[in-house]
Length: 266
Image (cartoon, rainbow, N blue to C red):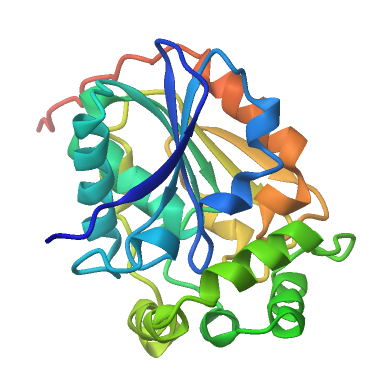
């Protein structure tokens, strides 16, 4: 039997949102964002492959595997078009989904997304992967957050409970090692990002210690960008109300037609 992909579903309506957590998290980290989203929207908060209740999903690790898995799961749920929201690794997954099947993505909201530059804080990511008890988890979340933020108790408890499942921490350690080989991460080419026509919003904390905010530089001009001052990498926990507002604003934007590139002459 092939393990399935887990998602917690709330709300109902013609519009659907898929929430994709970052590395080492799970669907429960969105607990402060979801209540601020419209109840008239169908919201699916996923456990990505290798995480939480999707721990046993085959081939877990690469963002491409996760992107294909979520697209397949959405199709099985009869979701024809979706507003994608991804944090960190989930941002890379969401971007790859939009590149693979752009006609199915109504908007793309990316919170400090992975894959936008080679720099990554490998030691901190690997430390977070191995964290099991609440004090270690809290210390890692503090290290990934901005200077004015204290980790939310419920988030610490959610991650602790998720990591209590046999094999979870070992799986995370394995994925983290592959993700941060030579303390670099894989990069999605910027010329591919330039092909995305749906509304795209990129949000980054000015004090992100995991992925530098300078990875926003050089994005396509039609992308909307938002710097969150004094925030770090954990935007879902640090600014949940702002994140919810940005998601809803981006959902209401219209796609911009892509300008055809002029052929070289001379």
